[in-house]
Length: 322
Image (tube, rainbow, N blue to C red; front, side):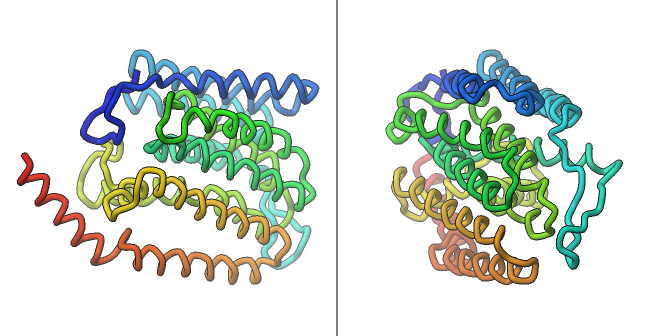
């Protein structure tokens, strides 16, 4: 059971092994798809990550032990062919640079980063499941448009499983994904992106999975910066993630989740468009979308002076209540 505490937004103990349904659903999807052998490396790594998360849900693992398990799972998947093997030339379409010795560490870093990013945004009912399903559908669409069919199946299967789980997880939730579910979903999405769009020989394609998974990746990136800046341990949780900030500035639980869904969908649409653009065109589009989101964040008070003021006001209220 997931017990409520001062960092979490739910007030009642909740079952947190919903990830078992996602895990079983993905394996069933593999069988329905004809048990394709090219999925086996990804499934092997994702299964190890699932078991690591399950152990954490049931018994509790230290952050470092959990990270070690994720690295091992990523190495298994990469060693089985889920690998960044080249990057596209930024100036010459179709020309590639082999990554050689960098392929394994870059792939492991990507798989572990996305696994933790999706795990970290699992802080509101339906948030990780919804964002993950949007990401999976977008990855499948982007892979299809880029002419890379290998990643379509895994991306579709994980998105369908997350969508099927969402009615039980949306606010008010009846069950949680748990670490086993959120880590498994994150790892599977990361692997699908490697097998799909990331293996296309165009430079702009490298931006696609980063943009599709922009919400969890950038939320995690800024969480690390925030903790380093305040000299806190990077594994120490806080209440300053994007979803926490939206609640503090006045969004309802459902409103915050739906807002993040909308931003994820916008990023997904941007990523799909990137598959049809040259690198300069893609960078221009991406700069415009990032600028729009930055201005919106300032306007809402998610960042900037208004956020600092709201944060201080909230801290003062907590002191008075305490």
